[in-house]
Length: 405
Image 1: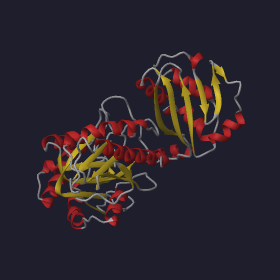
Image 2: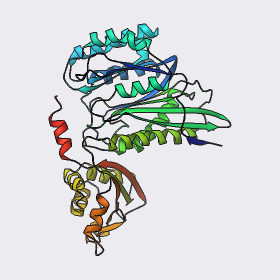
Image 3: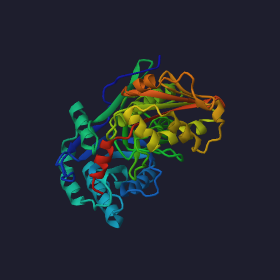
Image 4: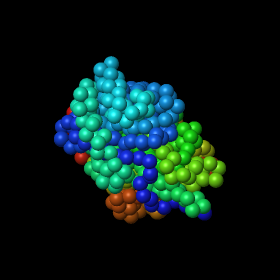
């Protein structure tokens, strides 16, 4: 029997965190994860053309190591982006220091950074703190919790999710950790992420198998959310498999593993939107009746990123005109006379005009809930998609007006 359920931490990994003095707050800002026996890996990166130094180095290391990772090195408080050769050198120096401690090649170190863009990364602070962080590595709940907290920036709470894959009495765990509250906006193109996500599993799998599982999981989760429509320069999703469980990813376990992975990634994606900067309403856009999934996603993404729609949602204003107008400029060809829109269970738009059943007060009551669904049916085909987004509030403006760049 195959199934997914809450799990313990995956075997074969150790975690830690410490203070390197990068965050102005003085909070922990350096996080490590170690696979003492090594791990296979698959990664997805931002589609932004402007990328941070750790993205450049991380891509090189994944390629040079043939998808083998021994340690993960993350700093928060500094994105190490737009920092030129200094940023690349700082990233390499940090990786070299950790590689010496872990007794592995530099290419087996995977770097990540998050924080302010354009400020030189103080590599000396990282290299000075690494011995302390390395000595603290452990496979305990406390160590994993310190890891997930140290990668936070504007997040108000740590984010993690778990699942278990069970097959014929043997099991493997998946543990996911992420950070992200702003600068969240997926784009079409090669699979990419919209924040920092680290997925750990103790199933045995090849890098190719992990890539095959990660792509669809990313597309259905992190590429299907938006907070502000901005794609970061540092977005990363990393999937690591230690193989320590003894359960192998093969034709018998693929479906169960992918189901569990999707469960974790979609849980994390929801947590990111729910913790979005200034968010007061989480909105699921369910576009149905489309000629293709691409059409459905294009319409959902346009609505999700519309400032007019998002500001209306902040006050619970059932302004359906903004929704259909956003859909109309999405680039998707459809007949507005065939479209219907529901806010929750309230019909608001039908046959090219306001629904005869439109009840503004009832629709407003739906939109006062923390979470609700807007459904747009094109009546043009069988394809559909779900896209998670949120409102745009005064607090979001305040947070980002005061966030030094």
